[in-house]
Amino acid sequence: MAKRRKRGDGGVSLRKDGRWEGRVVIGYDDKGLPVTKNVLAKTKSECTAKLKALQDSIQVPASNQPKPGILLGDWLDFWYQSYKKPNLRPNTRMSYERRIYQHIIPALGSTRLDKLTTNDIQQFYATLKQNGRLLRAEIYGEGLSDQTVRGIHTTLHAALNKAMTENLIFRNPADGCRLPPAKAREMQVLSPEEIQRLLIQAKEDGCFELLLLELSTGLRRGEICALQWDDLNFRTGELRVRRQVHRVRGELVVSPPKTKAGNRSIILPASVLGILKAYQETVNSKWMFPSPLKEDSPRDPAAVRQRLQVILERAGCKKVRFHDLRHAFCTAALEHGMDIKTLSTIIGHVSSSTTLNIYAHVTDEMRRTAAAKIDQGIGKADSQAETGATPRKPTPSTFQPYKGQRRKAGTGCVTQINDHLWEGRYSPVWPDGKKRPRNIYAHSEEECEKLLAKLIVEMKTEITAEKERLRTAAKAG
Image 1 (spheres, one colour):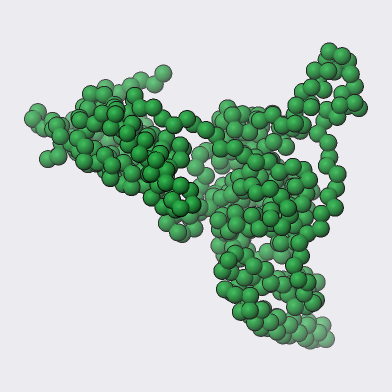
Image 2: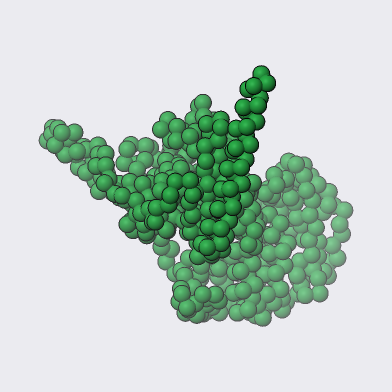
């Protein structure tokens, strides 16, 4: 068990940037809030030594003690800005700020810390459940979800715990609160037949390689969008997951994985490698799945989610989230005998118990396998022949993809990406025998057709000029 530091000795913690930070209270301001100083170092021992030197150099006046009457709102703001914000990732900061500044402070911020009761907090949680939603209440209802209320409790409880260690309160009033039950969100799994239809339709809609890779690896949506060609070794089949894409205040941000376990390597099957190798010839970007708007940027995870829903509808599949494709990979891996530890490493979980709790649900196929093994052990039955103990290959689907209106050869193709964006693509074969597709985008189908026609003329002119150049070079040689 780790040795606890004495009260008043300050605290030492590891920052997200890899440095150690030591922080100690040196006094209290007019509101009674702690005034702190910090030190930074590369190692924990160096940081501890710096912190002790800081304490020895500071003389705290005996009368400078915390004052009663500190408001919860003042303490929450101080606690977040001083203790939490410097070490949080951008998305996590946004979550904390929503909980603190949009929910807790407006409701309880004017209450004194030493007067805050368990009943006050319990009534606050009840109000959040009834009418705490601030946005899109007409879609999701007036109340917040159980998960959101539990997240707000986690933040408030942590802030009050810190107030206790600073002698601002004697006990944490959030300790006795009754919380909504922690319910795992039910995940939908596509059947083998639905997966076949999904991939058939994805090939028609230009999203085949991304969805195939997802079903083969179980990557998170932000991770698969952040893949670059340098991450894949075609010789060994190793795919390295080193970054993720997410939105922060409306802007796409590329960052390292949240945990050490998220930075990992996966070995791809030979069949998937072959498909990705052919697909690479059509991509003119360092990103494996570049944005359709600009090739020097990764694809937006939100656009991938929207695209999946269109493909699912056209393929006649039930509506699932992109994350449920990750669940489908895990389920298939377990059905085919992969152990939990290996699966946990592949999908980037910190603990194998997390994988087991979330993904090790018992499917029909797994129940049949278990029953067959029991029968084989007790009745000596031939489980392979009579019960189908091993996962069976699904019958090839006869599904025909939705194609829409067919276009004449040489006129390119036009696809609706979402409600306000159309994509036009022309993929001619150049004199060197390779296809080099180009895309254009517009806010209406009519505008897209006009821009595509102009693009085709320009590319045909370039191809003609290239052929002439090659002929001239051949004659000169």
